Image 1 (cartoon, rainbow, N blue to C red):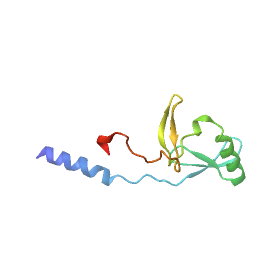
Image 2: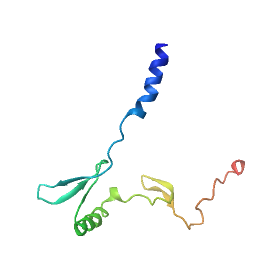
Image 3: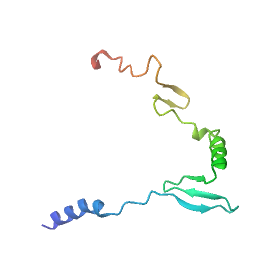
Image 4: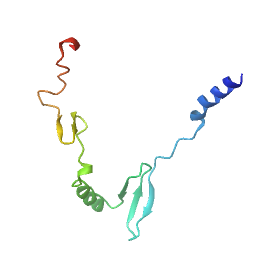
Length: 100
């Protein structure tokens, strides 16, 4: 009986937890610039011109140059390739005759 109560409590616990707020917080930097802080750790300027300039600057960093969402494939240590939609090899499936 104790096990059943414990299992029921563990199953119900996530349902009872409040949803985390997903709205950004208004904040300001040390220099007095207005920014928005998002729950996932990202932040952006409130001023659209400064936000666009920051996005352009961030796009130059290699850690922000990830593969396109719709592409397939993998790149490990510079070996491999990404296959983008429209390429003849996109969604071709396996070349193994047993899997066709």
